[in-house]
Image (cartoon, rainbow, N blue to C red; front, side, top):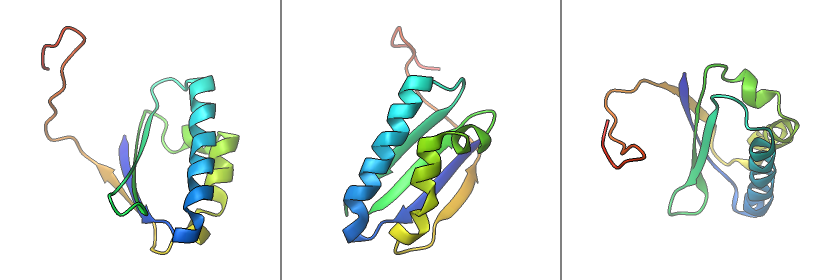
Length: 103
């Protein structure tokens, strides 16, 4: 399963938001949950975020992490737009493997 989550953080909450995200990624780096991929990107406005999460046990794998629970606890309060979540379906992909070949 793969999901995309998008939202816009209030200007006065960006520093706290980034700190909480850093805590989530520190915990992910330490625990290395099997099969979980999580990425967070910010658009060029500096406030609009797009998260992508992929794995066999979504959302349970992330929700079990204490740092993610802290991050998620007041996310709606940090946002100035409603959070949007959509399941993604892969149509095509192009990525080089370790030898530089493409799939």
